[in-house]
Length: 269
Image (cartoon, rainbow, N blue to C red; front, side, top):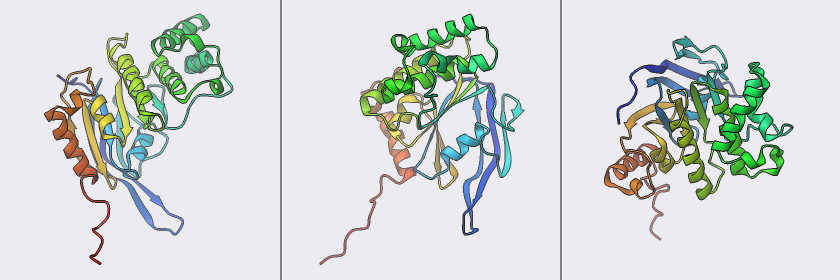
């Protein structure tokens, strides 16, 4: 697998600090630097509270950095932008809009003509398997269907960078695997000829192995590893059990501390 060569995202010594109510400073992201080429699918992995979501919010322009710089497509980030689409862990579908109107919303904001945006929205709903519910209200859909709507929406908007913050974590295993396939199929079949650059936050090691070209590992706000995943797609459940993938999984589990006992042994009676 040969990754693209042109850079899309660059972080240089990025840091994000918070002040707690007691005045103590907390470092959520500590001196993080990396480059992501255009079209690469990158997973950010680490335990809860390690800075993954904070980093994604800075990339989305929803949080400022405390220091350092973030450049996307040769432009320094100063806030949200249409070139960056985001899917959050919680549902980001407008409950007062029907499914088709949700998918069209970003296109409407950009003044895309009505007939064109309807065609684009229907195309993506068809690709995520939701053509039959285009006139439904969000309250009528399951959790997995709502995620399909959110994914269709960000692809319809046409941004070059897609960021997803643990989007499938609340779903059952079967639905999560189905949506991983939906996401990868859309990413692979991009009609523009250039795949979106994807940053996908997860705490699920198997999910990262199934999706990523590359895994960035975080712990206590710091990036501690950068691991390429060179397994060809599609990656079946069996392929994740092959020796090269097991070796990566062991390394990831070691980094995030899941290969160590959670509690010390009880003292002898």
